Length: 458
Image 1: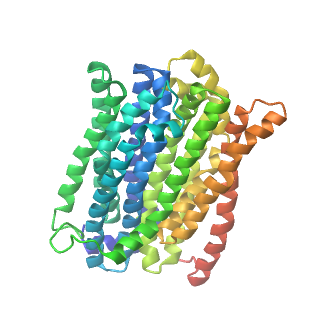
Image 2: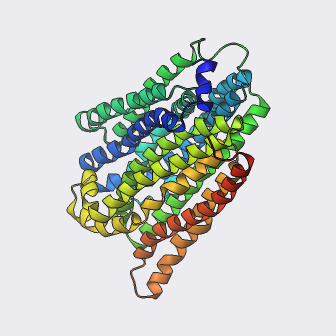
Image 3: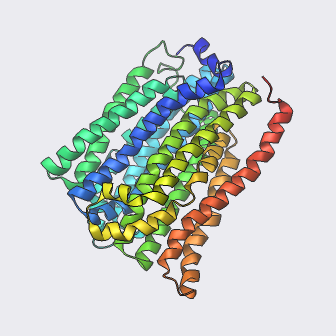
């Protein structure tokens, strides 16, 4: 995309820009969430409830692998948007090369470490002697394809930042469609079980990476692959990693929380309890990914206008994004309150598991209507390079609020004569509410500062 076209981020209507950039992101992230849902649905119906529990155990490990890709990809995407706002196109090209180099290095490291210590990691994450084989078979394939996954997510974010949200969306949809086609073939026809689900994911990402590489080989693009950029630049690497540290730590903290949660569920409940959390979390993830699509649409708009000192436009994009995210998560809240059985049956036909999952699902989703606000706020700070505040918001929820709640509430419930497993379930909505309050306090103070710098007229 030409430099002239990119300047629309600083001149066009915020509403039209968010619609233009967020719609492909929403479609792409909705499609992306189908990765998790489709795998779980096919595995739940095709392999069984214990395989579904094993997949839930494997998910935090898979998320940790993806978090290292986020460390590079999100930070670099935000940095590119800022550099384009500053009209520094040479540095933007260097960022592109650094994305590929760093993803190859980190992807290789995570693969080697993960494969070497796979079983001890999975047991620590909540696997039992029954579910370990399913988790192991799935993660062996995912780890082998880890480099491809990192490059796929990194280049996808770069496409959005240079003004190609639709191509980013098409690449994601291509991967999802291939995954949906290959899953039943590998799982049912070829009888590969959970290995088939993992293999379908990796193959579909390989195809999408090829499409992304073709785009960045085009010399007509603002940033593209060419000679002279293939070296690690310390300044770019450190700043990209610094910005990307916020979503990275968010992912790592979230993974650690799931590990603690899985172990508490196994301690006070059973493998069935882990499966219940897995199904509810996958359904919640579907809506959260729509919010992430809104975040992706907001990111280049906010980053560009921040870099151009157009704070009024930046804040309008943020507030509109919060409104949209609240509507999305409010829909999830309605599902959780009115008809949780409907989405649970998507994942399993096991009547015992269904009966045990309805009440916990209602509890976990009971405050979802307010969760979109802190999600957008954290990404807002990442988009303008204020990584420390994004890190603080995320780690406070995950580490200060949630982990102590997961550990202490079951003991409190037990002391009150209530089954301790309910303390685990209630810890989740409690911390979502506290996180929303904290985000409101912090962002309102900063909004006042930006209004003083540039009043919201025009």
